[in-house]
Structures are given as C-alpha cells and as structure tokens.
Amino acid sequence: MPAQDVKPTRSELLEIKRRIKLTQSGYKILKMKRDGLILEFFKILEQAKQVRDKIQKDYDDAMEKAAIAEAVDGAIAVRSAAFARASHPEISLRSKNLMGIVVPQIDATLVKSTVDERGYGVIGTSTYIDEATAAFEKLVETMVQAAEIETTMKKLLDEIEKTKRRVNALEYKVIPELKDAESFIKLRLEEMERDNTFRLKRVKDKAQAKAAAEAA
Image (tube, rainbow, N blue to C red):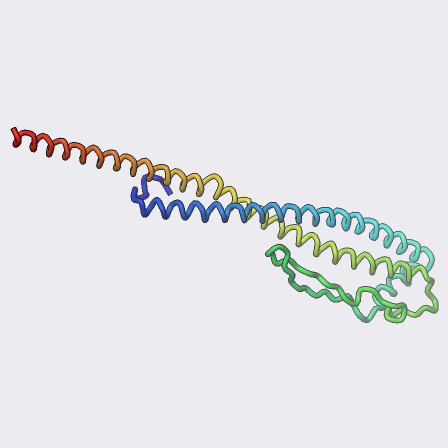
C-alpha cells in the first residue's frame, strides 16, 4: 500500500494502526511456526539419516544371505522359494497431523511371515533360504519406514519454504508499507493542523484589527 494512496484522516490513521498491530501479531505467530517447523525438520532429518544407513545395512545383509542360500541350495531353489509365497505385503496409507501439516502414515502388513506361510517346503531346502527370506522381509519393513520419513520431510520442507515467504513478505513489504502510510498520515495531519492554526490566527488578527479601527 503506497503511502500516497491513503486518505490523511484520523479515522484512516486509527485503521492503519489497527492493521499494523494485527499484522505484527500475525508476523510473530508465523515466525514461531517457522522456527517450530525447522526444529521438527531437523528431527526428521536425523531419523532419515538413520533409516538410510539402516536400509544400506539391511540390504547388504539380505544380499549376503541370498548369496549364501544360492550357493548352498542353488539359484533355482532360491528363485522357486521367492515365488512360492501365497500372500504378499500390503501397504495402507493414512494421514496424521504434524504441526498443522497433513503427513502420511504408512503401515505395512503381511511383511513378516512364518516358515509355514512362505509357501515352500522345509524339506529339500536349507535354513539359509529362511534366513535370506527373513532378511529381505526386514529390508521391506525398513523401506516402508523410510518412505514415510522421506515424504514427511519433503512436506515439512515445502511448508517451511511457504511460511518463510509469508514471514519475509510481512517483514520486508507489508509492515514497512503500513508504517510508511502511518508516518505519511501523521505528517499530513500535522501540516493540516498547522495550516488551520495559521488561518485561525489570521482571522483573529483581522478581527482584532477591525475592532481596534472601529474603536478609534
């Protein structure tokens, strides 16, 4: 709001002051929200680092166990075991609120299974296939956890950027323009007050001069 566009009236001055107070209050709230989001982001970031390390560890472990199973039981037996399972992991997606932001909550079911549920017979296969299967199930669980954390982190980052833009707009544009408008109105009102005082003085001086002339 350019200062020149406002009306230099007392009612407008009161309105500008009200808007400044309201805007400054909103600015403080947004700053608190931004700072809270940043703190939460760094917490999630630490979780993301940990889960990425865990994915790598679980992946290496699963691949190592799969290689051992293949060496002992053969590639065909390992592949047959992989396709033997009747049930498959199911992913359900829900929402939860994190500091006013809707973030996903990802749940995985039927990931871990018992030996009986895996569909392949225990006769003719070694325990190495069971160990490899369990290792890959663990990897899937970690990947689901990572997906939730990564998505939450992205949503937090988007909200932080949006809030920062709003904070900056208030701090560097809206509030300064309102204060400029306030100063402009005060200045114009002071000028008008001086002009009125000067006019009243002239009228008074003329009246006194006229009265003196008539008395003479």
